Amino acid sequence: MNRTTLSLLAAVTALAAVTGFAALTQPDGAAGPAAAAKAPVRLPVERSSLLCPAPSTSEVAETLYTSFTPAATGSGGEKGAAELKPSAEEAADETTADTGKDGKKADAAKAKKPAAADKPVVTLAQPGKPVSAEADGGDAPALVGTASGRLAPGWTTQQTTTVPAGGARGLLGVSCTAPDTDFWFPGASTAKQRQDYVHLTNPDDTAAVADIELHGPKGALKTQLTEGITVPARSSVPVLLSTLTTDPAADDVTVHVTTRSGRVGAVVRSADDTLGSDWLPASADPSGTLVLPGIPADATSVRLVAFAPGEDDADLRIQLAGPTGTFVPAAARELHVKSGMTASVDLKDVTRGEAGSLVLSPAQARRATPVVAALRVVRGKGDKQEVAFIPATGPVGARGTVADNRDKGTTLSLTAPTTTAQVKVTASAGTGAGTPTSKTYTVKAGTTLAVTPPVPAGLKGSYALTVETVSGGPVHAARTLAVPDDGIPMFTVQTVADDRGTVEVPAARQDLSVLDD
Image (tube, rainbow, N blue to C red):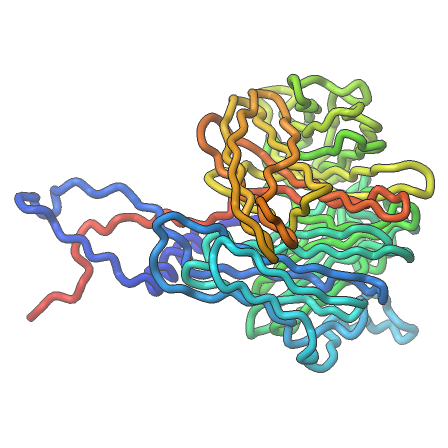
């Protein structure tokens, strides 16, 4: 997702507006303008936004929301607030782009009346203590929310939905996303056995207009939408991908969502007639080297889908970082990705009983073509299969958090693709009770360390895991949550990226306070 210079300047300006203007006076003896400029400082963000998609259309769905902000040592400032509420309007039905007999396009912005007061509301009161809320049935709406003050830095919310039966059966997990203007989703599909919807949620008070492009194995798919999709203010619109095009169905499709005006949160919900369902989050920004962390040890099928958005083809070297080192899978050594076309390869049971992470790098070191990528991972066999998706993700950086971890069924995968690193993992208090605890792990270069993370003593409810890089090179992380049901190995995987809880603010070169006359 793009982070433009304009966005950065806007963020700094907004930060200044909240925290007050920086006033720096010259030390005694400083030579006016010749005095050395002070280094930039990192300050906590003062406001964060999150968007959670409508969880399911199944009447038997059960959804748990878990919201959390890490406790920051020495943090000051306003106490703040964090709350997720139902969007003001919800799309009347899951939207298709079908044209009727009169040739007119279905209205993607059609909405119903404001959400009822009994819809879920998630309110976080203090850093370091997660809270949860529940919603049942198929009419739970998308949620829109903001956090301010001490609750803003690193604010995260996990949406976990269990659908025990039906076409959308599965454990569906997604970390609620921040609004943006550009998203890439390799790994989607318009195949007959798939029902893939892209959910667009607008957090703002004015309408947003989004464009959706589809790219299959032979290039761009013809779309019936020429005027974009209008997403009304503070509302959510789900769009069925297969209705956007008249081209033949494609098993592997890359979805590109951009906005002409405004910003949205975007995520794809995929349901397969045989494999169940889960959310497909956006891939990391296009890059020549990508890491896809957290493939479960017992994965029975792993499929890699990649896309090169630029003008050049990409030749990717495929490696698996396992517990003892990095090696080339027997199923595929390289993947050729033609510009503008979606490429895929079946890696089969690539992990062979040991958890690992996929590392993609240029086959020729001097030719690093930016790509986006995702994995479709299957566990189980026959009619007892379950699917999840792992998008390429950036490193944890200073800190990253994932909420809704359970005392059983939680696995944390840590990958250090280039350099040995140390990471500190902190288990928060529980939503009901529990004492926080921490543990430090060493992840050797070129390996993936899969661990059962620490669990708070006296845990009641679920808890959050915060991963911090202590030393060494970049670390990529993912959390697998497994909740078996009736012999089906239901699971979901969430990657853990840098929470961007701080922003670098240039130090002022002079006193910006108002001068006396």
